[in-house]
Image (cartoon, rainbow, N blue to C red):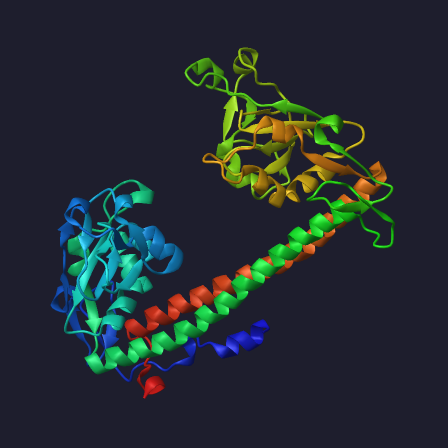
Length: 450
């Protein structure tokens, strides 16, 4: 479905008429509300229902737990073993509206239902018993951008990642409240429209998965099979590699690139780290290594003193660095002289191997690397397995052609990925705008669900 068709299949707030008349709410941040709506404090139609319970008071082996991470990731709680619950929780009885007091700007809000096993939620949620109002309307009210902005304006805690809204701010917030029949109409309208938008977002997220698979396949195909589909092939004898062009060679990487293990200078010695000017690749650079082909800066720098008094080495520009712990197989090419931690290997390519070609070969090994780490409690690849890694070796000029073709093909796919991600962002912005416009009375949706 192209963008123009999708735009016609969902509705923007601008397509709806406003209410016939408005009045001043008397609340500065709310502004005007439709004539016929009331201004009420939230505790006039909802009640804070706090029932705290210790895990030791629960006799069941399983509980259903609403945590902020699970709601953010899946939109629901999770069935968990009681043994995994190690702190006090709130007990839920009946349907409750859960509003996160942690980082209210993110709007983590859900309607929780009681299950057949004890139903709990994190103490970072505020459980609300909604009475005298429509439950789903109340949910959209607390998801709305206007409500999130207001709660974000009154948070406490100086730490940006742990800002909390007081319970009193959540339950004593002033709102414009329509009659209940109108609340139900607004909720029904938003159920329908957000479902349409969510379906489109899901389709586009699936498209992203397919494009990423195509991106990986393009790289793997080029570095393991070459660019000419008509050339004779031979069996490499390496399971993940399969057949390769008959005129190619293959070797263990350590025979065509110098393998250098990393090291960490003593963290307790200030002179090894203070004022450091030697980039030092570590697990702190994981997010960067997921995105780049070349690494030029690092999160941590060491000093020449640190290098001199440790087993670390300054590796030359053009070294392929490779993570063998935690997130396995992240790699990039150094732009300058750099050292690496013990969680990394550095490969200094010899005259038969281009660093860029080796980079793409390593990124094609994902399944094989997964096999080597399978079953490990701490994800790592041992040095014997690292030393056993194999690379195909096309002629030098062919490596250059393969790298150029991979870069061109990847750029085309990345451009498509960017367009799809932009479309997802626009759809999510539209969803947010619709919810806010409907629950604040900026648009009149009563006829839409008549």
